[in-house]
Image 1 (cartoon, one colour):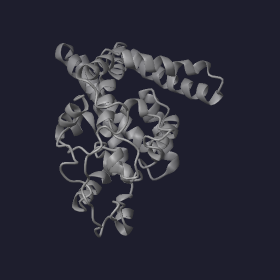
Image 2 (cartoon, one colour; image 1 turned 30 degrees about the horizontal axis):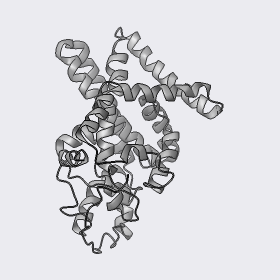
Image 3 (cartoon, one colour; image 1 turned 180 degrees about the horizontal axis):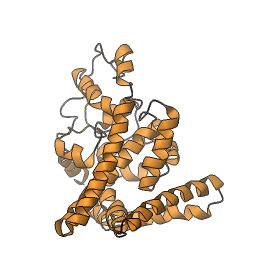
Length: 313
């Protein structure tokens, strides 16, 4: 079932000096929005690594309360790595394509059990065919709203690692794939994971890798990924108007800190123009508001409001 949560009516948009009536950024504004801040993004990446190291150091130094806090924060770290990997997949993380792709593969994708190149192929299909016959993520978005019991079962499977283990097993079967590219890519990912474990082992804290890297990936990250994904497209359907394919949710500091880092929560703006780097999305969203493309009651006031609607069957 698709389209059960399509808005009954949509705001009537108007053209402005910045956007067209169908919400496309215009002229100089489009050029400015598409400008990639490579140096700032490099610092963002460095800071992400430093932040992750500090979280792990806190768990080692103050294990009684540090480990539980670190476990929760490492779910956020996985969301951050995945968000920057998403930027790389769109080739808007660094202006230099070679640097963008190398960083995306080795410092982002493989680190979080993902082939950035494979993700790019699948994700571009998502943008080309939102809810179409080749939509790769349809299973995540279809059949909403669901019952509260169904919603809870999904989250329990995610939180207890059932979803993560199932998907990781499927991924690891690639080591016997007849496709040499799949095998080689998977072994590169395994090599990066072995390096991470080796670093923890060499530092005398081998347990950090399974407890504060793999386990949060299999649990916390899966919950975050589902809650974010259904808030992006749950219950909608295919249409040329992106407001019928993509939800818009008002952003707040807590959601931006934990659930949707690096402006990934401005998802409607991202789908209207997928070539915009993450730093431009808040500005573009404000332009969509000014043009009347986004307005109440189309925009949800919070993620909680949308999740309640998604489990209201």
